[in-house]
Image (cartoon, rainbow, N blue to C red; front, side, top):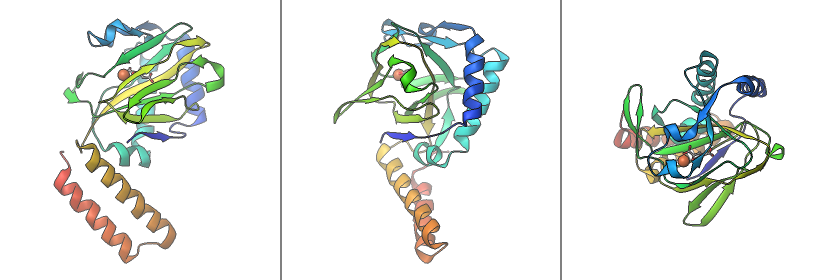
Length: 224
Ligand SMILES: O=C(O)CCC(=O)C(=O)O
Ligand SMILES: [Fe+2]
């Protein structure tokens, strides 16, 4: 399942992120890529050790925690610390698959889902689409500032060369409580349906039965 979520962070936070990143120190993105991805990765990343950057990471992570769609679709068990990336004119990230196991300060994690949170307006740069190779063919995504795309880490994907302007984004990875993508999708559908039922009719018997099934499927499938 590939999911696009609008307005994951507020316009106010978005403008603070842009202001901070305008003065931030960026490093060569190859430093954090696996050995094969390194050969095709041409971008820059903000140094997360800087306190202002670390604070923004925290605020964005809070936004993700508070976002019901992100939580329902990803069911995060572990997350890689966020990363700000920048692509200037001529930069790109060629076809690659993300590492299956990544290091975090708390130990290793499996990557089930990858995400990109777009930080500047699509009209302000040319190129820079995220292109995902799926069984339905190649799909390209270039979302409004503040919107996020969540996609399976198992895919081959790339960032198309930027030919004008600058592409800023936050990228991150999730290990889900539910490893199997089909099971995760069933839980997502059930959770969405029970929320729609609640909004339309309140806490009905149908809502209760959907909640019960959701909870019991989670008992069967969740790793915590
Ligand atoms: O910036 C993006 O949209 C994706 C970047 C990416 O594929 C990666 O960092 O592994
Ligand atoms: Fe990637």
